[in-house]
Length: 241
Image 1 (cartoon, helix red, strand yellow):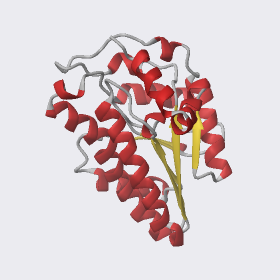
Image 2: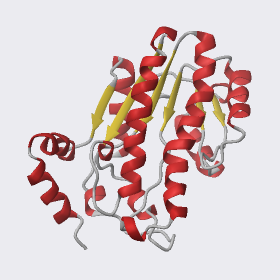
Image 3: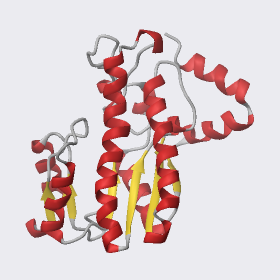
C-alpha cells in the first residue's frame, strides 16, 4: 500500500527471504527499496541500522512499527522467560527503534512515528496477560512521546487493530514455549491484511493521532467503557477453555 502511494521503502523483519518476497510484490525500482533485516528482540545494532537508511535515502519521513508476538497462557503459569520475550519484542524493541529514528527526525525537524498497538491495549483478556500489558505500555509511551516531540514537528499515530486474518494466532506461545499452532475463528473472520493496511495508510495521510482498524470487534472498547460487567462476562465466555 505504501509502494502504491509512491513511497521509498525500507523493509525490516527477521526473515530476509520473506523481505525479498515482499520487495518483489512492491514492484519498485531497486533504487527505491532497501531490505534491512532486523530482530527487535536484539537491538544493540539499531543505531547502525538507522545510519544505513540515512546513507541510502538521506532522511526518514515515516516509521511504521508493526512487529509483535503473543502468547496464550494463564498468567500464573507463564514463565518469566516468555513474559520478558513478549515485552522485549512488543515494547522494548519497538521503543529502542523508535528512539533511534526519532533522533534523526529531530535533526530533520519533521517526521511521523506510527505504532501498531491493539484493541487489547485498551483492556485485558484471559490468557493474554503479558501481550495485553505490552500493548497498554505502547499507549502510555507513545502518547507521552507525542507531546514531547510536538515542537519538533514530529507526529505520532497509534493504530489499534482488532482481528486481522493472518496466521498470528498460530504463532502464539504456549506455557512450554512451543507455538499454539491453531488459527482462531476470530482471525479467520477478521479483516483482511490488505484492508488493514489500507486503513493504516489512510490514517497516516489524514494526520490522525489514533485509529481503530477492524470489524465489529472494535466496538468492544466502548462496551467495556459503558457496560463493564457485561464486557467482562463476555470476555470470560470467549476465552473459556
